[in-house]
Length: 278
Image (cartoon, rainbow, N blue to C red; front, side, top):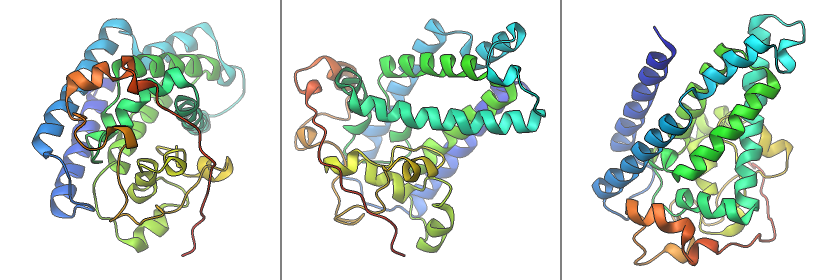
């Protein structure tokens, strides 16, 4: 089985599983038409895929193989078993993605792009893949640099991309996870209830819980917010300026958003954090 087949089968298995879970046990009622949102969100994902294939055809795996052939990167110059090197690479890449996510919240021009993700007024599996194509392109360049600097093994890159995409779909899922199971998983991995806080309309919650896979980075770097202030049922999803009649589900609107006047609205609030109490 090729690496592309592995990623495709993993993607389809996870997205279909989360979709079924959302249908059987949804966490919150949606306020917008699911069909309209999905048609536009998945259309944006298709645009992203075409842009990446056209502009960066080699992908992160090709970059990893090239770096290994050239002997570039930290892990190509230290004695470590393939398993240890793969695990180290996956963990470090996950931390880099955490800081990349924070960067897109802090730098105004990057926030213009990242707003497309946060402007969704509902959150479900499709939100986990809803990003502006320019943000996807920049994210891929950052990943390329990280892979080269780290000397990440090809196996680590494949594993990391499968895990990252899978966890993004899982923790954006509109799924009801039993509280006991959430408490078991959350100390190490990001859960849907944890990441949902990040999509709150309240700025101090939007600027928290940046992790996609490992939850430890938010706790280590002081960005962890345990639960939404108003609770999961009463919290408002999205951004304040795009409530009401804003056509947030339109692909044309999403593509134009970073270049509009509202696309520049952003301010870093005073940060409040909460820890788990249960």
